[in-house]
Amino acid sequence: MPENVKQTLRSPGIVEERCVHSRIENATCQRCVDACPRDAWRLDDEMLGIDSDRCDGCGLCAPVCPEAALVHDHRLLSRHWKGRRLALGACERADVREPEGVVPCLHALGLTDLLMLRDQGCTTLMVLPGDCDGCDRQPVTRLEDRIYQVNRLLMSRSLPLVRLQVARPAQWRALLQETGSKERGLRRGRRDFLGGSVRRRLAAIEGIANPDECRPPGRLLPGAAPDDLMPVVPVIDAGRCDGCDACANLCPHGAVSLREPEAGRLVYRVEPADCTGCGVCVDVCECDAIRLSSMAPAHRLAVGLRSARCGRCGVSFHRPEHRGADDALCRICARVDHHRNLYQVFD
Image (cartoon, rainbow, N blue to C red; front, side, top):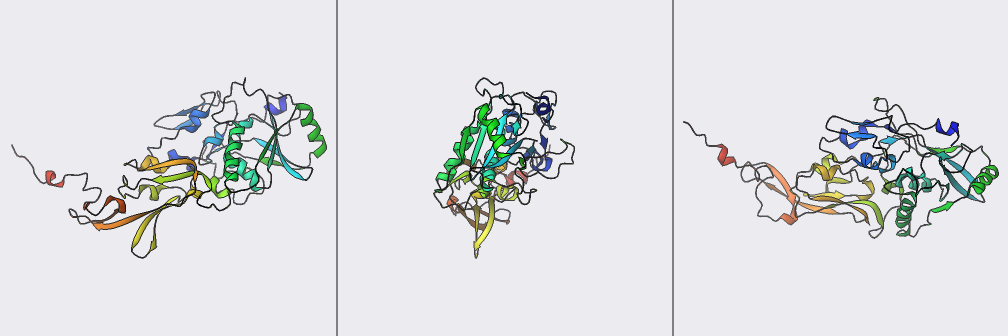
């Protein structure tokens, strides 16, 4: 590996306010920890942090973060070739000497990155891999599997597919020479790590509007018909739900919301296109009434709610209609025996 390539590697940065652990105390997400081949990430009750001595800058933690809270310096090349726009990337462990387009690990390209490439008109990814099977960095999900996921999403909409082409070293060098080096690359940026100064995620591709926004992958796809697949779909079990509104109140992107589409009738509205799969709704639900379904049909679910007044404390509440009208207590009174608290035993 050329020395000038090695010097570009850096530990990933984290946008603290995006991490689910900064949003709820009981977050169970540890995808960055599980994805790291070096065991560099540390998660405990006090903090989420990284051991920079262990981290080799592979970036495999970034694509598994549902909230795009992890950023790195990996850079692909954007080139026009034979009437097509290509994204070019080479593994640092491949037989390549040119620093252009070289990244620590090609498998650090996530689903959102690939959809952003397509959104920018780049439907062909030309790569020069290393020996992935023999590499000590074994990704949770490989690049070809993510491209398969993207193409499943596109096929359900009858859209052109993303192509993955594997080049040989000689082809790679010839392609770089043929297409020239004046075009600017596809960037993913970083800022100071855990320093509190990270306030925005640089665009994964130059020209993306509003880089401060964490875009759910479903929003990078055309409007979905009910049978079209979505990356993640929240599913509410109305029979378990107690109407506490925690999922609707804490969802970072409004994928689950409390609405009043018709006069006098509240509903929980599920919008799959807004879901990142962060799992906040699952973690805060005390009834295990919500789950996340991957690569599922894009049904916009509306759970109808029945409004009532608690027969014990008099507080107004609502519950899914499926629970029936015989449930006359609010969620608090249903759990607390108030009569027991009225009595005090004196010695």
